[in-house]
Length: 159
Image (cartoon, rainbow, N blue to C red; front, top):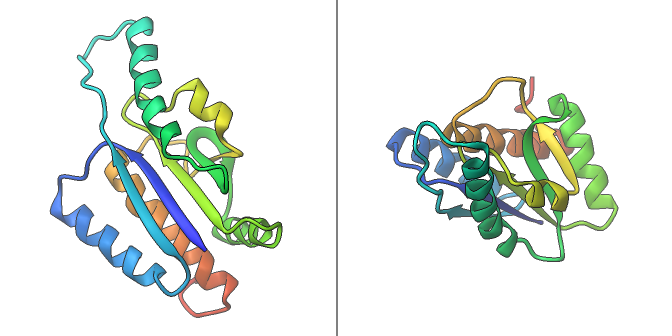
């Protein structure tokens, strides 16, 4: 199984990098993980709706260029479907049984994801009604993917 995380923005903080590396290492038993960091657009504080749409579109093009035709695409979106950890594990398992072996997870930049990216997604998922920085969301996402695999394998970790 392959997991590709497409993330707009770079990780600068060492503590996030260490956490990400730890979960990627743990996941090696279950999946090949590839994290692709995409450049974010510089955005001044007070953007017009038009400027916001332009920035999201530019970032979205970068995202879409990195999605192959072979996988199931999850867009992390605050208004997406919410799952328990068990439900997320069941979802991953069901998609694998349906023939998917490559999962793409998309984390947008500070302004969110473009309409084009959201339209391309097979499923929009949300981890909370709260907004998280993309650096922290990457750690949360990797931890939940790891947890899902542990649940599916009936291995201890999930409590």
